Length: 266
Image (cartoon, rainbow, N blue to C red; front, side, top):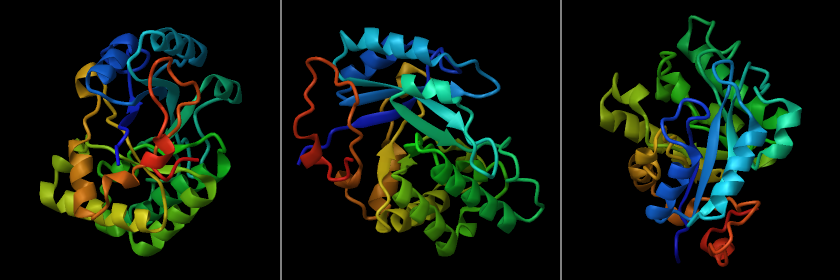
């Protein structure tokens, strides 16, 4: 069974990335990826022009060796799950990722780590339920590291809440290798084992998993090394990675067989 590799989380010069859209897409083709999603930030730090991003992706698609998806990484603004994208942006976007950050209101005011862990889950659950456009939770739980919340605080009960919201609203859980938030403060093996526990539990509840490099230059495109290590520790076969069907297939790039290669396509 052939794995169709997709990098569904990348950034360009349209936000805080270092490479332009064309170079990111060319690199994905060189590395043999089936799909790359350009998902620049939409936040108070970066102006976001979805129409321009869509147009540049469409232009690059004409010469691309892989499928190209025009998307966005929106911020979960508060514990109630509001996203940072306006309704009028959505028609221009083919994929919406949602991330928590330290500015997500209502999540980090408590002095108790256990309460902050509960709030992080609540914000993601509410984001899944409130936003039909949301397709992927970007690097879930990573915000816990700078917030001083240990991964062990994400208990089965909390993960049950998250898994149910993801399943009911068809929102995927992203695996991403750029985990420096954790690695700078904790032993590598401890972080990897705890994250594998969480991924194993989430996947066991039937939640889709996707891969995203969170690359901020062409040199990071397709970096799934640590994510694949997590999958191995979690005893999850790579065939369990969901295939997100490109809404606008790139001419000349094979897409036949995607459903058979990955059984979680919608």
